[in-house]
Length: 122
Image (cartoon, rainbow, N blue to C red; front, side):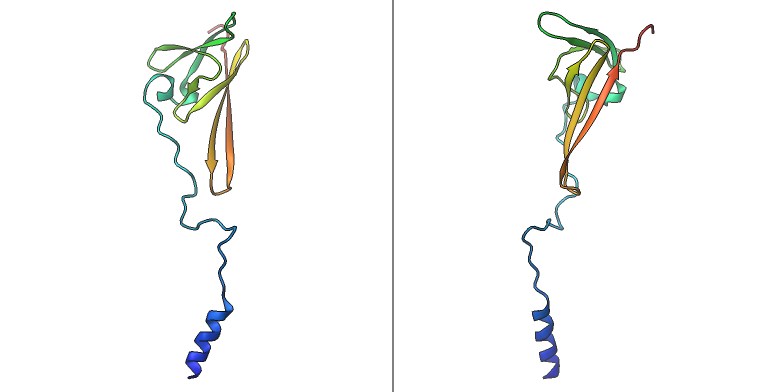
């Protein structure tokens, strides 16, 4: 009888309330969407070379060279890199790219900026 009373009091002592808590079985980092393996999205951003920048009536544009020797013209809003990086700004000597993804471990949006600079005289 004493054992039964001890078990009953142990059950009453702990009351778990999951409201406002993270699901312990959820993935810590969400999976990033799979990028198509073509064009500029087939490469890491750091593997791309900025070859030229121009401005015109339709806005600025940049010329990238991929490691396989192909060249690509991009504008603001173009997706670049394997993890859906977006060209956010094109300056006269650089291109700004931003990747965004969710980190569930810290429960926040991670923004990873890149700046690719034009190499003069190479």
